[in-house]
Length: 372
Image 1 (tube, rainbow, N blue to C red):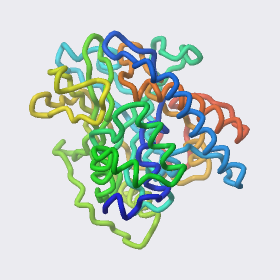
Image 2 (cartoon, one colour):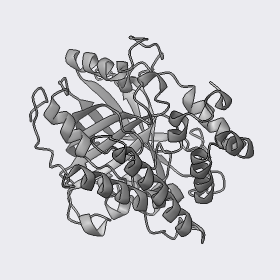
Image 3 (cartoon, rainbow, N blue to C red):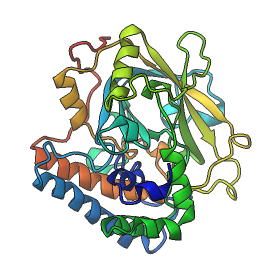
Image 4 (cartoon, one colour):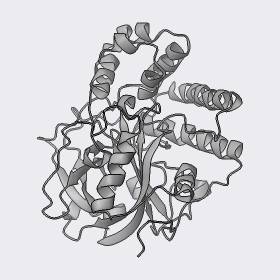
């Protein structure tokens, strides 16, 4: 599917939002320094996206939704088990000791309500019961840590000013011009939209953006694996319900009614600063030069997740990579913008919906969900 065939589609507009709406952004570190024009660009992005949420709400959308990744296929309870045999150099932060965390995992479309045209697909992981002070001053004593992943390894926008240009172009109906002037963004967007998916439980997911691991820099990935053998699983991209706009959630429900699903959670440690930049997340880090290492396993037990109470709980959750221990802090311009933009969107959304923002404990239980 080419850019030209979907130039002014709202779904295409949301592709570049696929990470920003899922998460939140940091003060720069010595390894990841913000350009001088980034602050102004961040303010513009915050206003553009907040105005978009408000416009939909004023047009009658209830409840007020995330600006992207609004449609969830499901929000499921899981175990996230940090392994005991992690290489010594990777035993930092959340991965410093073997431990099992209860997690809430939200699977989503980057845009729209039709699963066949959701473009990118997200996996947001929220660990609970995580000890230690966290980064965000207003949530320093919370006991959660989040990982934001998407089923493509690189982002499609290279800089904060470019992102402002993208949003402005989309609002003015000038996306075709934007993509002609930014061919790399067009290429990546086309690659993202060309993917086919049969189930969220069979996709490999990537952080796209970098994170600190103490003094090192890493990216994350979650690979679906057999719960019995640990062998990686592949998605053949064949839709089991080709005419159903909600087929992904149904595919998840069928799979989890029959048994568990599992993922290997992996780290990719940066080995070459020249070819593996922190600021430009459109650049792929070569897996041959920097292989992924499994540091945890995720098990989603057999369960139901369709109760109205659980769906409301899922809708009210807030995911941001800035729910994090300082040792695992987010890096790069996308994550810095996320901190500002996500806080603004989450606060606005919860205020409009009359719901208090609060982090889960992991002890929540709903009809059909696993107990432990």
